Length: 162
Ligand SMILES: Nc1[nH]c(=O)nc2c1ncn2[C@H]1C[C@H](O)[C@@H](COP(=O)(O)OP(=O)(O)OP(=O)(O)O)O1
Image (tube, rainbow, N blue to C red):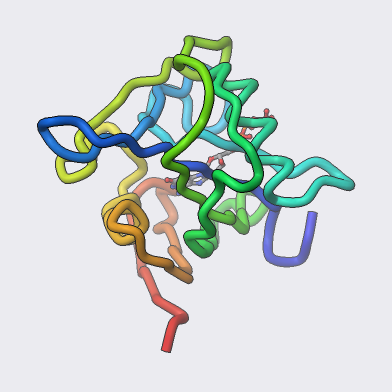
């Protein structure tokens, strides 16, 4: 683990529908964030690049195959849990508009498409609407989200971009 927290990744798969853009999220069945609707992703294993990790995690969690050239760099978000520093994470963010396969449920995630402009924020981490809409619009972020001592609500959200 690095000084600033564990290296993790998230990938937001996007598709166009007649009703607008949709994003693939998932209900987390186990581990960190259990019960929440979260982005697809997870920890970077030793020796992996962020891209290799996110490709592996997307496949493990949804059965979908993403190629390195499908990944669009969407920046980073650092999650800081002052009351639980061992939960701190450095998250690299990606979007992708192309992949292979159909999303399937795994032991970790129940994948589900949501309208990108109407995210299920009441079932997500409370910080999601501080950074996710920009990512889904095709932008890049570099954000530090600091949680309150309840480890749920957002104490502050700071953009490091000029
Ligand atoms: N405040 C927060 N808001 C958010 O939207 N996502 C967060 C978050 N804090 C952490 N995450 C994400 C980033 C990361 O992809 C995920 C945690 O990683 P994992 O799913 O890999 O954790 P687990 O401990 O469940 O699984 P393993 O790595 O398989 O042990 O939670």
